[in-house]
Length: 278
Length: 282
Image (spheres, rainbow over the protein chains, first blue to last red):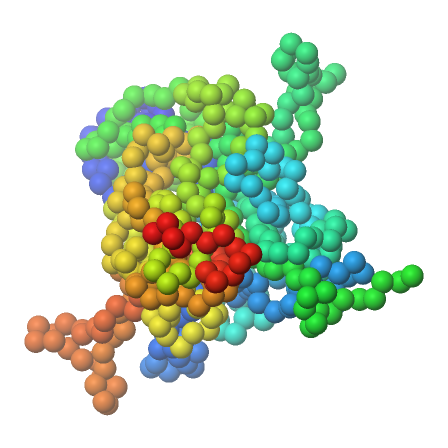
C-alpha cells in the first residue's frame, strides 16, 4: 500500500501543515499478491418468514430484501438424488442433468475482480495421493482447468425461484459459474461416461476444485535438475497438473463434493440400461 | 507472508518499503501535492485511492471451511524455492475430507456401540479476526425443509453456539496472503465418533446418510417478535424483542456470511455377514 511505501508520505504530511491523521478505521491494502481466498458458495434453506418478506411486493411494508437468498440454487453438495444410476455396458438412460457450481473471490482491482477462477473435476481422489492430476475426471463434461463465467448481473440469472440479493455485509465478491454437463444441457451419464469409462459398482465421489490461479505447471528440468529454457530464454514447461493449485504462486482453493452410487443392473431391476448393439 | 502494515497511531510514518509500485508512487506523490496545497489553504486533503475505509461494510471477510489438498512433488519443489518456505508447500492441516467418508473400518449400527471414526478437526478461516465462527450439523436434511432445526444433529460433538477456537498459528504458514485466522473444532477429541449410534444418543437407520455442516460468522438468526396486530413487540426498555435463535439460519440481515459442506457415510447392519463391523470392540 502506498502509505508505507515512501518518504513521500512523510514529506507530504509535514508539508501539509502537520496533517495528523489517526489510522484507526483506515486499513491499507495488502502487499500480498492474493490476499483473498476463493470460496465455493451454495444456497442453503432460508426461513419462511425471510422468504415471505423477500417475495413481498417491493412497495409493501413487508418487503425486506436483506433476507433474500444471496446465492443461486443449484445441485446441493453431498448425495446426488435421482437415478438410480447404474453401471451399464451400453450406457445408462438415467443421466444427471447439467448443473452449475458457483464460486467467489474477494480480491478486487478497482471495480472488477482481480482474479480469474479456474476449476477441475476429480473423481475418487485419494487424499494421500501425490498425483492428483491423475484423477481428473469427466473431461468431456467439465473442461479441466477451464475458467469460470463471471456473472455480472445477479438479477439476470434465470431459473431462480426467489430474487437474489448481494450480501449486506461486504463488498461485491464477484460470482463465477462453472457448468458441469455436456453443452446443450444433455447431462452426464455418471456411471458410464467418465472419458468413456464405465465405473465400478459402488459409491463414488466427484469433487469440483476451484482455484484462483491457473493450475500448477512444472518447469522442465535437465538431467542435472536445472531448468530448461526455450530460445527466448523462458522456462520450458511440462503439462499442467490439473488438480494441483499453484501454491507457490499463492493460489487458494476450495472444493465441493458430490457422492453417487453406481448400481449393478444385474441386481437392481429398475436400472435404465441402454441395450448393447450387437 | 504478510508484509507489516503502518504503525498504529500515525498514518504512514513507517519508512519506505523496497521497490514501491508505480501506482504506489503516484498515490504518494498525490499525497505530497495535496499536503503542500492544503498546507497553504489551512486544510488537509488526502486522496482516497488505495485507502480502504473500514466500517463501510459490517462484515468484510467471509467465513470459509478449509481442508488440505494433495500436493505433487514438483509443486513442493516450487514452494521450496521461495524464501521462508522450507521443503513443502503450506497446506491445511489433516482432517477427514468432506464428501464420501471412507472409514478404515465399516461404520455399523450396533446393539451396543460401534468403533466409529477417530477424532478429527474441522477447520474454518475468516479474514476478520474478531469474528466468532459457529457451526452446526444437520442430518439427512432435504433441500427445502420446513424447519432446518428438525435436522439439527450431533450437538454432543458440535454444540451450535460454541465458537471455533483459534488453531495454532504456527501451522498457518501462507504464501501471498495474510494470516487466515485459522480456527478448528475438535470433533470427538482424543476419542472416537460413533456416527451410526450416537446422534445425541439416537441410533441411525441402516443405509446411506448425509451430514451437512453449516458455519457462519454471526450469531444464528433470531426472528423478530410481533403482536397479533403485526406490530413489533418491545421490551420494557423499548427495544425490539426477538425469538430464539434459529440454528442453521445465518443472520443474513446482520451481514452474516456462511459456508457449508457435506459428508456422506454408510451405516451397515451388524447382522450383515458380508461386513466386518467393529461392534464388539466397544
